[in-house]
Image 1 (cartoon, rainbow, N blue to C red):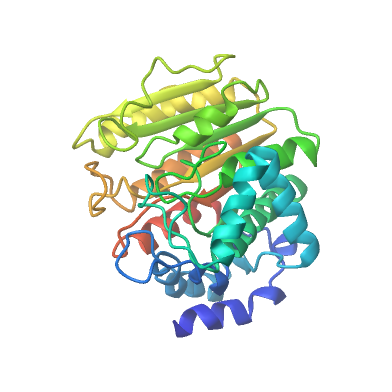
Image 2 (tube, helix red, strand yellow; image 1 turned 90 degrees about the vertical axis):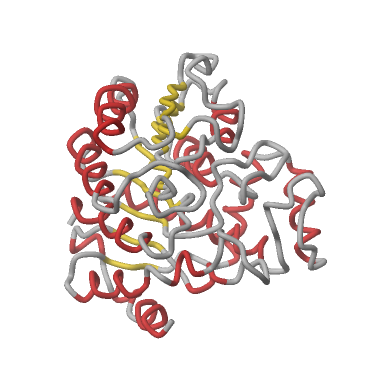
Amino acid sequence: MMFFYTLLAVSKICSSKESGRPLVITSKKFLNHKFGGYHPECPERISVCSKILQEMKEANHICIQEPDDSYRMQDISLSVIKNVHEPSYVEKVSTLCSRGARHLSAWDEDTYINKYSFNQTLLTQAAWLTGVDHVIKNRGMAFSLSRPPGHHASYRDSMGFCLFNFAVGAAHYAINHHGLDRIGIIDFDVHYGNGIADLVKSNPKIRYTSIHETGIFPTGRGGVEEKGDFNNILNNPIKYGTKFNTYEPLLTEKSIPFIKEFNPSLVIVCAGYDALSSDELSNVLLQPDDYRKISEHLKQAFGDAILFGLEGGYSLQDLPAAVQSTLLPFI
């Protein structure tokens, strides 16, 4: 934990705009949302990455910034979330968190809450929005290293550890605040981002593509037949035991061309690391260095101006190396 506090203590003096280095947006406040017992979506997902991020910062490879936690930014984040989700659902989450509830509903006990969770989701959305601002203004790579994840959250329901859909919030913010008209979302989390698909399928300004394991959560979703109302969704299901030699062509020959032909004004990457062979929640066999290769392909296609945001990834052993691998091609 010492590295994490050291990292944040020096973060405000690092000017990514001047240096051109990748910007990582993170905070010790992302540790407050916790279950109180074992749960794969745990605060350690952030804290285990702190040592390697500190080393990268000291080597002048990256810049680190805390997300804006001002009242103004909280209001903006809340407005964005309410633009994506049913307002009454947002109020429900806020109320139950303030009461210290542990879950939002009996049918979704996988997704927990505590008294800090609602404020943490506002800060997580703020981190994604800070990333949008950075990518658009500075044309550099940004990574929102935040939690909880969001890509399963639907219009009025939590699901799969997710309360709100931060990637879709970032896309809406780019459209409504920055005036962009074409957003591409690439999702390499091993679980299908059903929440993203449902929220963007009728929006011609957003394209979404996912590479995910079939036959696992969320069951029955993510088939190739799901194309969106404007042919704006492309799904690439993969099988149990898939290695990178099979995975890579799906990225380079299907997902990237699908987004590139859209000529996106902004590319958002849902960076889930649960396709790692060491991850207990999937059966795909990617290795940490494979994420360097993924970033290389993305940079070749879209340049440095890409926003990454943490989704899943529950192997505390390999998550830091995978996050580092994502950053390396942008240094």
